[in-house]
Amino acid sequence: MFDWESTNVNKAITNDTWIEELQNLDEETPLALIDQFLEIPRHSERWFSQARVIESICSDATLSALRTRTTKASSELAVWIDDRNTKGQPREYNGPLPLLEWVEKLKLRRFGDDDHIDADVRRIQIPNPTSLTVGVLILSASKYQKPVIRDLLWRHLGGHASFQSHFGGGRFFVLEFHLPFFVWRDTQEARKDTRQKGDGSPLRHSTNLAFLSKPDPSSGYEIKQDFLHEAQFSHVTTGCNNSMWTSCSLSDTYFYDDQEDPENPDLLAYYEDEDETCDMPTMGVFDTEYPVLDPREYHLIGLKTRLGQVADEWDNIVARLKYKIRSHVSTAAAALVPSLVSPLMGFYGLGGSNLICSFNHPCR
Image (cartoon, rainbow, N blue to C red; front, side, top):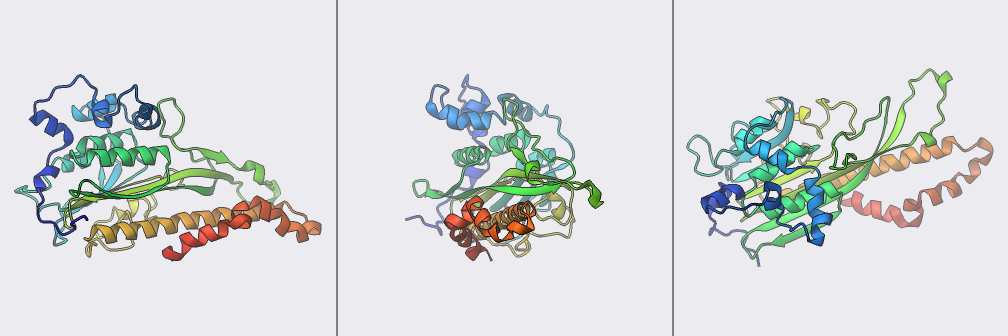
């Protein structure tokens, strides 16, 4: 049984990254940085199904550039971070940060830094993870976090659905969930994912639903396009006990029309105000000034919040699809609408409503 209250913890294990530990051991290897992180031989079947997914987004060249500080990055906000000690006291840099500033903060010692309080609890969220933000996450992982981050990236980038909890020989815990879902948006201009895999294809696909629309130029309204976007939210919480842990969340936000919307809790702009102390991974459900310091409670709050988001997006899809179908049905055939909609809405007609209910009940 895992000892959540264990005091037999070496806090120093989180101060050094896995790369620094290799350097301390003076271990030289001809392997590229990305291969050292992945730890999957290229002849292995797992390389194609797992390693290739991560490498297609974050190449060895990207990792090398980040490590040698030759990376050019914009000053735009890239990540949300919140570091606190066991009393809930924050470090002064908490909140949204640009990429290079985040890199500098991650270089600080989490424990035993003379100029900063200990960062017993660290929470990170990366919206729309790119090759650079993924690279920083890879390079900043400690030795015990390395397999956790590797699994997080594989499942998130690959669009997998998963709920897991496991314990590493009683020394550390891992709680994670991965939620793939779809988002329906109507926009004047197509919003497509600009992040690309190694083969040039987008990380997430968008489907134009123009075949469902009947544009009416005489209506006087601006004609918008309907798109169904792939999306994913992934979250992992890992640590050694109740008081020393790290959580990392990855989310897709490319489909939002206004990427700088200060009213959208799914975007970094919402947290840019210095007086804004809401928690981003839970979309502002609680105030970071009164933080949830128990990793199990925090994990469940995040799961509840994000399942609610997925359920809302599915409700939106069903409502829009019903509306589109009905707009194509003549008044004379109005009586046939239920029998036409049900087969097409197989999710509802074949028991899908029960599944949606199971998502709704714990979330609302």
